[in-house]
Image 1 (cartoon, rainbow, N blue to C red):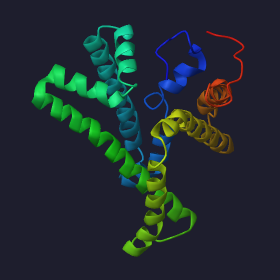
Image 2: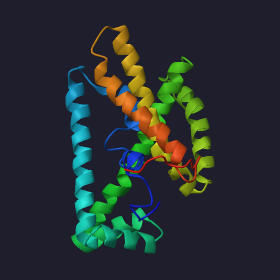
Image 3: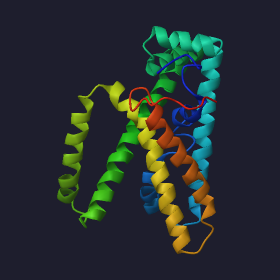
Image 4: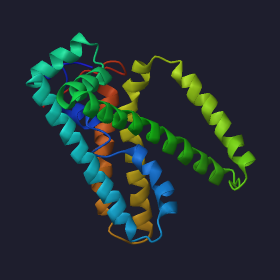
Length: 229
Protein backbone atom coordinates (compact mmCIF):
# COMPACT_ATOMS: atom_id res chain seq x y z
CA UNK A 1 0.00 0.00 0.00
CA UNK A 2 1.47 3.31 -1.07
CA UNK A 3 0.01 6.78 -1.37
CA UNK A 4 2.63 7.87 -3.90
CA UNK A 5 1.35 7.35 -7.45
CA UNK A 6 4.91 7.59 -8.76
CA UNK A 7 6.10 4.73 -6.57
CA UNK A 8 4.38 2.03 -8.59
CA UNK A 9 3.82 1.59 -12.35
CA UNK A 10 0.34 2.30 -13.63
CA UNK A 11 0.37 -1.04 -15.42
CA UNK A 12 -0.46 -3.54 -14.01
CA UNK A 13 -1.14 -2.03 -10.56
CA UNK A 14 -4.25 -0.18 -11.73
CA UNK A 15 -5.91 -3.37 -13.00
CA UNK A 16 -5.15 -5.25 -9.79
CA UNK A 17 -6.26 -2.40 -7.51
CA UNK A 18 -9.56 -1.83 -9.31
CA UNK A 19 -10.35 -5.49 -9.09
CA UNK A 20 -13.75 -6.74 -8.10
CA UNK A 21 -15.97 -4.22 -9.84
CA UNK A 22 -14.15 -4.50 -13.16
CA UNK A 23 -13.61 -8.25 -13.42
CA UNK A 24 -13.84 -10.77 -10.62
CA UNK A 25 -12.93 -14.40 -10.22
CA UNK A 26 -14.95 -14.48 -7.01
CA UNK A 27 -18.08 -13.41 -8.87
CA UNK A 28 -17.34 -16.06 -11.49
CA UNK A 29 -17.48 -18.73 -8.78
CA UNK A 30 -20.94 -17.47 -7.81
CA UNK A 31 -22.29 -18.02 -11.32
CA UNK A 32 -23.26 -21.70 -10.75
CA UNK A 33 -24.98 -20.71 -7.52
CA UNK A 34 -26.96 -17.95 -9.24
CA UNK A 35 -27.77 -20.23 -12.16
CA UNK A 36 -29.48 -22.67 -9.79
CA UNK A 37 -31.77 -19.85 -8.63
CA UNK A 38 -32.89 -18.68 -12.08
CA UNK A 39 -36.11 -19.91 -13.62
CA UNK A 40 -34.91 -19.28 -17.16
CA UNK A 41 -31.50 -18.93 -18.80
CA UNK A 42 -32.56 -15.68 -20.46
CA UNK A 43 -32.68 -14.04 -17.00
CA UNK A 44 -28.90 -14.38 -16.82
CA UNK A 45 -28.29 -11.23 -18.82
CA UNK A 46 -30.44 -9.05 -16.57
CA UNK A 47 -29.07 -10.56 -13.37
CA UNK A 48 -25.36 -10.62 -14.13
CA UNK A 49 -25.19 -7.49 -16.28
CA UNK A 50 -27.46 -5.65 -13.86
CA UNK A 51 -25.42 -6.51 -10.79
CA UNK A 52 -22.22 -5.57 -12.60
CA UNK A 53 -23.58 -2.12 -13.46
CA UNK A 54 -24.97 -1.70 -9.93
CA UNK A 55 -21.61 -2.53 -8.36
CA UNK A 56 -19.93 -0.03 -10.67
CA UNK A 57 -22.38 2.67 -9.56
CA UNK A 58 -21.70 1.87 -5.89
CA UNK A 59 -17.96 2.14 -6.54
CA UNK A 60 -18.42 5.53 -8.23
CA UNK A 61 -20.52 6.79 -5.32
CA UNK A 62 -17.82 5.86 -2.79
CA UNK A 63 -15.09 7.35 -4.98
CA UNK A 64 -17.03 10.61 -5.30
CA UNK A 65 -17.79 10.67 -1.57
CA UNK A 66 -14.12 10.10 -0.68
CA UNK A 67 -12.94 12.85 -3.03
CA UNK A 68 -15.56 15.27 -1.71
CA UNK A 69 -14.98 14.51 1.97
CA UNK A 70 -11.17 14.65 1.91
CA UNK A 71 -10.95 17.37 -0.74
CA UNK A 72 -8.76 15.61 -3.30
CA UNK A 73 -6.56 12.57 -3.87
CA UNK A 74 -3.73 14.01 -1.78
CA UNK A 75 -6.09 14.67 1.12
CA UNK A 76 -7.44 11.12 0.96
CA UNK A 77 -3.94 9.64 0.78
CA UNK A 78 -2.76 11.72 3.72
CA UNK A 79 -5.74 10.70 5.85
CA UNK A 80 -5.26 7.04 4.99
CA UNK A 81 -1.56 7.15 5.87
CA UNK A 82 -2.38 8.78 9.23
CA UNK A 83 -4.81 5.94 9.97
CA UNK A 84 -2.72 2.98 8.77
CA UNK A 85 -4.61 2.67 5.47
CA UNK A 86 -7.70 1.59 7.39
CA UNK A 87 -10.54 1.62 4.85
CA UNK A 88 -13.09 0.90 7.60
CA UNK A 89 -12.06 4.12 9.36
CA UNK A 90 -12.52 6.11 6.15
CA UNK A 91 -15.95 4.59 5.50
CA UNK A 92 -17.00 5.35 9.08
CA UNK A 93 -15.83 8.97 8.88
CA UNK A 94 -17.49 9.61 5.54
CA UNK A 95 -20.79 7.97 6.49
CA UNK A 96 -21.23 9.60 9.88
CA UNK A 97 -20.04 13.09 8.89
CA UNK A 98 -21.87 13.34 5.56
CA UNK A 99 -25.07 11.52 6.47
CA UNK A 100 -25.41 12.16 10.19
CA UNK A 101 -25.98 9.56 12.89
CA UNK A 102 -29.02 7.85 11.35
CA UNK A 103 -27.81 7.92 7.76
CA UNK A 104 -24.34 6.92 8.88
CA UNK A 105 -25.64 3.88 10.75
CA UNK A 106 -27.66 2.80 7.71
CA UNK A 107 -24.64 3.21 5.45
CA UNK A 108 -22.41 1.28 7.83
CA UNK A 109 -24.99 -1.50 8.03
CA UNK A 110 -24.75 -1.74 4.26
CA UNK A 111 -20.96 -1.89 4.48
CA UNK A 112 -21.13 -4.64 7.09
CA UNK A 113 -23.84 -6.55 5.23
CA UNK A 114 -21.79 -6.70 2.04
CA UNK A 115 -18.89 -8.79 3.40
CA UNK A 116 -21.24 -10.93 5.49
CA UNK A 117 -23.36 -11.87 2.48
CA UNK A 118 -20.20 -12.32 0.40
CA UNK A 119 -18.86 -14.72 3.00
CA UNK A 120 -22.15 -16.59 3.05
CA UNK A 121 -22.21 -17.05 -0.72
CA UNK A 122 -18.51 -17.96 -0.72
CA UNK A 123 -19.06 -20.77 1.80
CA UNK A 124 -22.21 -21.92 0.05
CA UNK A 125 -20.63 -22.02 -3.39
CA UNK A 126 -17.57 -23.82 -1.96
CA UNK A 127 -19.86 -26.41 -0.39
CA UNK A 128 -21.74 -26.91 -3.65
CA UNK A 129 -18.51 -27.22 -5.66
CA UNK A 130 -17.14 -29.82 -3.26
CA UNK A 131 -20.44 -31.68 -3.20
CA UNK A 132 -20.36 -31.88 -7.00
CA UNK A 133 -16.75 -33.14 -6.93
CA UNK A 134 -17.44 -35.81 -4.32
CA UNK A 135 -20.98 -36.48 -5.62
CA UNK A 136 -22.50 -35.84 -2.21
CA UNK A 137 -26.27 -35.34 -2.11
CA UNK A 138 -26.90 -32.08 -0.24
CA UNK A 139 -30.55 -32.64 0.61
CA UNK A 140 -29.60 -34.13 3.99
CA UNK A 141 -28.34 -31.76 6.69
CA UNK A 142 -25.69 -34.22 7.83
CA UNK A 143 -24.14 -34.24 4.34
CA UNK A 144 -24.03 -30.45 4.34
CA UNK A 145 -22.32 -30.41 7.74
CA UNK A 146 -19.71 -32.95 6.63
CA UNK A 147 -18.54 -30.49 3.98
CA UNK A 148 -19.25 -27.22 5.81
CA UNK A 149 -17.44 -27.97 9.07
CA UNK A 150 -13.98 -28.50 7.47
CA UNK A 151 -14.50 -25.27 5.51
CA UNK A 152 -15.28 -23.37 8.71
CA UNK A 153 -12.16 -24.80 10.37
CA UNK A 154 -10.00 -23.67 7.44
CA UNK A 155 -11.62 -20.21 7.54
CA UNK A 156 -10.95 -19.94 11.29
CA UNK A 157 -7.29 -20.81 10.77
CA UNK A 158 -7.04 -18.10 8.12
CA UNK A 159 -8.40 -15.52 10.59
CA UNK A 160 -5.32 -16.13 12.75
CA UNK A 161 -3.05 -14.90 9.95
CA UNK A 162 -2.18 -11.22 9.65
CA UNK A 163 -4.93 -9.75 7.48
CA UNK A 164 -2.41 -7.57 5.68
CA UNK A 165 -0.74 -10.69 4.31
CA UNK A 166 -4.01 -12.15 3.10
CA UNK A 167 -5.08 -8.83 1.55
CA UNK A 168 -1.72 -8.57 -0.22
CA UNK A 169 -2.59 -11.58 -2.36
CA UNK A 170 -6.37 -11.23 -2.47
CA UNK A 171 -6.72 -8.90 -5.43
CA UNK A 172 -4.12 -10.82 -7.44
CA UNK A 173 -5.68 -14.21 -6.69
CA UNK A 174 -9.13 -12.83 -7.52
CA UNK A 175 -7.96 -11.57 -10.90
CA UNK A 176 -6.01 -14.77 -11.53
CA UNK A 177 -9.15 -16.80 -10.92
CA UNK A 178 -11.00 -14.54 -13.36
CA UNK A 179 -8.24 -15.20 -15.90
CA UNK A 180 -8.62 -18.97 -15.46
CA UNK A 181 -12.38 -18.72 -15.91
CA UNK A 182 -11.92 -16.66 -19.09
CA UNK A 183 -9.56 -19.29 -20.55
CA UNK A 184 -12.01 -22.03 -19.55
CA UNK A 185 -14.89 -20.27 -21.29
CA UNK A 186 -12.68 -19.66 -24.33
CA UNK A 187 -11.89 -23.38 -24.56
CA UNK A 188 -15.60 -24.18 -24.27
CA UNK A 189 -16.53 -21.70 -27.02
CA UNK A 190 -13.84 -23.13 -29.31
CA UNK A 191 -15.19 -26.63 -28.64
CA UNK A 192 -18.73 -25.43 -29.43
CA UNK A 193 -17.47 -23.59 -32.54
CA UNK A 194 -18.76 -20.24 -31.27
CA UNK A 195 -17.31 -16.71 -31.12
CA UNK A 196 -14.42 -17.56 -28.79
CA UNK A 197 -12.64 -14.23 -29.37
CA UNK A 198 -15.19 -12.59 -27.04
CA UNK A 199 -13.40 -14.17 -24.07
CA UNK A 200 -10.03 -14.83 -25.70
CA UNK A 201 -9.05 -11.14 -25.85
CA UNK A 202 -9.77 -10.38 -22.15
CA UNK A 203 -8.17 -13.73 -21.22
CA UNK A 204 -4.93 -12.69 -22.92
CA UNK A 205 -5.04 -9.24 -21.34
CA UNK A 206 -5.71 -10.60 -17.82
CA UNK A 207 -2.92 -13.15 -18.24
CA UNK A 208 -0.58 -10.28 -18.99
CA UNK A 209 -1.85 -8.29 -15.99
CA UNK A 210 -1.63 -11.14 -13.46
CA UNK A 211 1.74 -12.49 -14.58
CA UNK A 212 3.28 -9.01 -14.69
CA UNK A 213 1.96 -8.05 -11.25
CA UNK A 214 3.23 -11.13 -9.42
CA UNK A 215 6.67 -10.52 -10.92
CA UNK A 216 7.05 -6.83 -10.03
CA UNK A 217 5.12 -6.68 -6.73
CA UNK A 218 7.57 -5.54 -4.06
CA UNK A 219 6.48 -8.11 -1.48
CA UNK A 220 6.36 -11.01 -3.95
CA UNK A 221 9.14 -11.48 -6.56
CA UNK A 222 10.09 -7.77 -6.73
CA UNK A 223 11.67 -8.03 -10.18
CA UNK A 224 13.12 -4.89 -11.71
CA UNK A 225 10.48 -3.15 -13.80
CA UNK A 226 11.39 -2.74 -17.44
CA UNK A 227 9.05 0.11 -18.14
CA UNK A 228 6.78 2.52 -16.35
CA UNK A 229 3.63 3.90 -17.86
